[in-house]
Image (cartoon, rainbow, N blue to C red; front, side, top):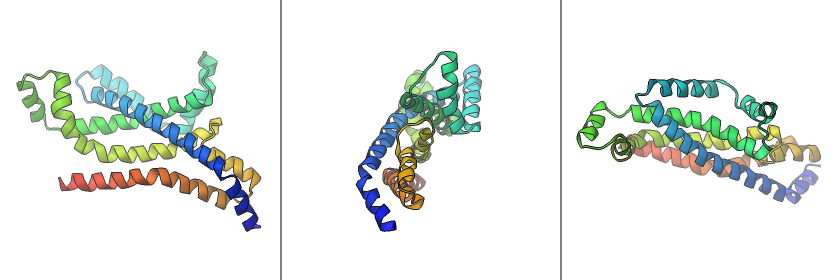
Length: 218
């Protein structure tokens, strides 16, 4: 019987590749969006404007303190009651952007805060404005602290795409659940799902390990 199910699994493997493509698409768009938003929020979070720092702090605390699946439900099921109707795919992207940007914000803010005050003073004394200080002096140094955990966060974001299956996005996990209905061999099906997640996550894991070792040596 196992051999029969395995043959069926091979037959519908293209279905899994479509799920892998959807997962990759969500992950790529989310990583770009989260990184941009996270860096902007992180810069303001480490700034001197106390009002902005507190607002961003509340946002980060809420996102980090609530389950991601609850955030997905709020965006997909609750926002329509307030007049904002989103289909499953854009709702998934919005949820990923909100969640990922909060975590990346803290990584970026921590990296910027690790730069000694003397570096800021030296940059200011060189006649650079705040934007130039960040671009040419502070961020290049902060990236040594930011990059390893940032890449690690990318891996977590890729795995978190599995949560959006609860609103019907046909990504890898959703494909797995649909397949289990037709092929009642859960271990076989979700071993394949796990292997495909590993394929897209492992290169980033290697990159994260490499960066951690390189930064430790430096």
